[in-house]
Length: 199
Image 1 (spheres, one colour):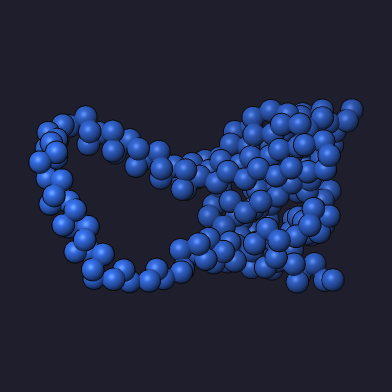
Image 2 (image 1 turned 45 degrees about the horizontal axis):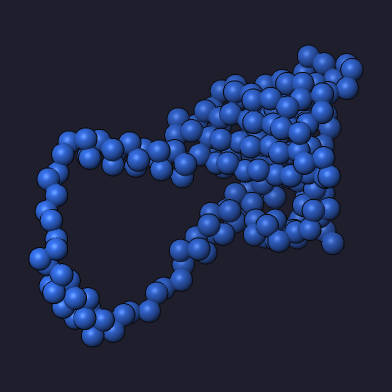
C-alpha cells in the first residue's frame, strides 16, 4: 500500500505498529502528508463532538423541576466569594493549557520508549523522553520543528532519556520530530525520524 494512503488511518490511530512506524518515517519527508494530517487531526477531534444528542421529552423537564421544587427546603444558598472566582479562573487556565498543550505518548518497539511533547499557550514546547538508550558514540539525538510550510529547523540536542526545552516557538500545525544525527548536530535531518507528531 502507498504510504500516502495511510494518512487518514494514522489520524484515527487505526494503523498497526509496523504501519505506524513506516508512516512516521515517511511523514518526516513528505510535506503533502504533513499538511493532510494537520487537517485530518482537527476533523478527527471534531468527530467526538459531532453527534447531535436527541431532544429530551418535555415531560422530563417538568418532572425534574417538580422534584427540585419538592427538595427546595434542603437547599442552602451559598455566598459567592472572590476566592471561588479565582479558583475557577485558575482551573480554566489550567484546562486551557491542557487543551492548547499537546501531550502525545508513543510507545515504540518492545523497549517501551515514550516521547511526550507539551506545547504551552505561548507555543513554547518541551519534549520529554523516557526509555531511550544513550546515543551511540559519535552520535546525538536531535529534535526538529517542521513548520507546515518551510524547512525543518533544529530545536535541541540530547543524549537519551531526558526533558528538553525546545528552542524557539512551535508554530501551529507544525511537526515535532527526533532523529539520530552526528555529534554536535546538523542543520537539516539526515536520517528518518525515530519519532514525529503534529503539534
